[in-house]
Amino acid sequence: MCDTISLKACRLCPRQCGVNRLEMTGFCGAGADMLVAKAMLHFGEEPCIGGEAGAGAVFFSGCNLRCVFCQNYEISWEHHGWPVSEQKLTEILLRLQKQGAACIDLVSPTPYTLQLKRVLEEVKPKLQIPVVYNCGGYEESEVLRQLEGLIDVYLPDLKYFDRAAAARYCGCADYFEKAQAALREMYRQVGACKQDEQGMLRKGLLVRHLILPGAYKDSMELMKWLGTAFPEGSIRISLLSQYTPFGRAEEFPEINRRVTTYEYEKVIDQALASGLIGYRQERSSSTMALRPEFDGEGIL
Image (cartoon, rainbow, N blue to C red; front, side):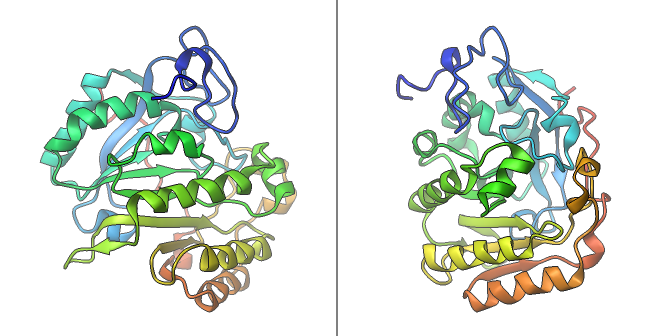
């Protein structure tokens, strides 16, 4: 990687902490070691990612966004996890493939891009399944460029259009500015979506979006942008209705409730009007049932 990207003065994400992670942790809570909370076959991902076999999900601890409503609060805010060496992670990825995983699903990988690049360079020739980079969208394009050829599917959660909302819920008013550039870089690397005969995504950009209570107009603006930013039919979207107040949501009255059917359907309508293709979520998914326990499974 280029000389400006180093754990000694970490600038892996737009926070640009500059923290020496060999001696302390940055905003994301990550230090020198990779922390992993769970490695498992996960059946809660989109059908084109997990299929019937399940995604080989590796949940990393630490997050450069730390949204106040995060349902994975234990790992994004509390940094619950266990140290994993690069060699150990390589073994975990190969074991997930052997267990029949449909893909390698790297969940919240951003703080560990340096280590992951080395791991993927080692393990990628041994993988017959796609590698998925499952992130929050708040990425540095310069850093993403270092992963070219190592990631098959980018799975960003595009969160906010409005600067005030991004500032209020995760303290980064520049979220959409950075996410725009990041998604364009992701698309440059992987190109238009390619699915196999079983409908599994082998290459491409799949953009998730979680609709927040009272923010459906913000979500609609994101759909409009996606519809113009990429060639029609070239990406996939996944619109999530599963928002459940969690974490610190009770401190923010406007999001301390679930999303209504009206709000969700308005975003669906805008996505269709914008020519977007993808997935919608059943309203019954507004539950914590799909949330895994971060108990060290697959690591300890």
